[in-house]
Length: 318
Image (cartoon, rainbow, N blue to C red; front, top):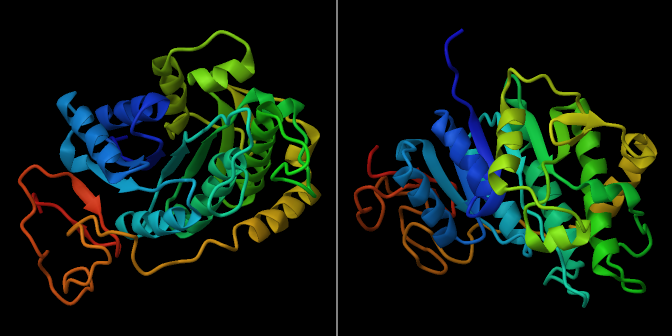
């Protein structure tokens, strides 16, 4: 069988295990959409991959700050426009909080939003592109720490009782439950590829694993030739027994209702705060408005493909 390149979105691709995973997928000839917290971070990551031998024509960049749910909604629309059929979504964004509870501008506990609510919105927003792929799969980086967690259904933001460990573990449990619930519509697994972030490592209280080794795990799980146990939690490359809530359909539904309530503050704006093609805020150019076939300013030679605020895609090589 001839090689069939995949369309892959890797979140957290500007550094760490996300960057290394994107590098492996790009080196294998797949089309990779790199997510960074900022456009600049994503562009730097793309430049690094190209310098390492990746084909720049196969690299795209999107940006979203997972502490802002509106950013995630816009990013999902951008990716959906650029990838009508998305084969793989690899979510590697994970944050370990501090000793003091922090809230996002959406009013959610930081770890619960970045580690769970934002990926939830992203995956929901990419349901159609995933459905258009013949063998789509979702790979969500979670943690074995979810096994000792408990979801506080009445206080998910930990207003009353907070420690960084309980909040982090709760976010991982929620993500693992949600990923398992996707199994009816898409191949989806959660995985602990091994702790590579020092802040997360402190919560594990165990030895670290080089980001390169964790990336090997994730890249392997992206391979369509690797059969996955749908809905399972993987400890590196091995599916392991799930904690009871992960397979509980009542927990799936209860979590969905809770999540929908916590994410209702995320609107669907027409434009992001600034246009990544003309840098105006807000952008009012005829090209970004869709009435002109040409961008307002020439795009420098060698610029990476950018998915813009109105889901248009332009490259100087096209």
